[in-house]
Length: 97
Image 1 (cartoon, rainbow, N blue to C red):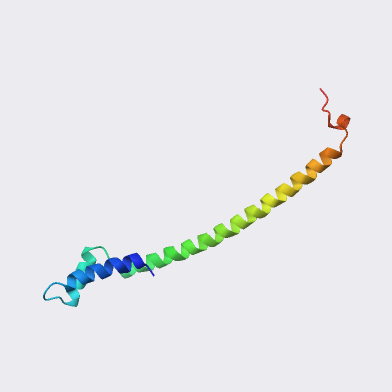
Image 2 (cartoon, helix red, strand yellow):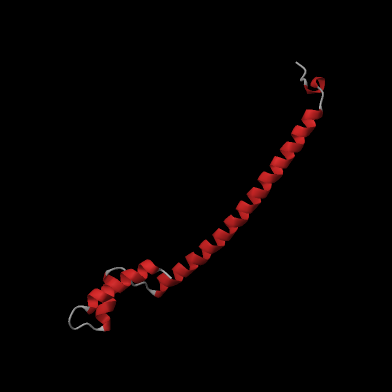
């Protein structure tokens, strides 16, 4: 539910109802004049965009979990490598000139 849109529409309707001779078309005109009416195409587009955004959020969550897993694996491999390097003698660590 879009509470901002509902609040804005409610305000426009309230103002329209305060005038004499208000009919439903008057309220619809007031809503349209304030940019609060959307046609079926816009509603369909909005639904499609929301669906796409939900799918992208899901993909992002999966990627973030994978990144966390990979970071943990990298830390473990780094610990293992450092442990192996620590077991080498000084001479084995030397690099020939």
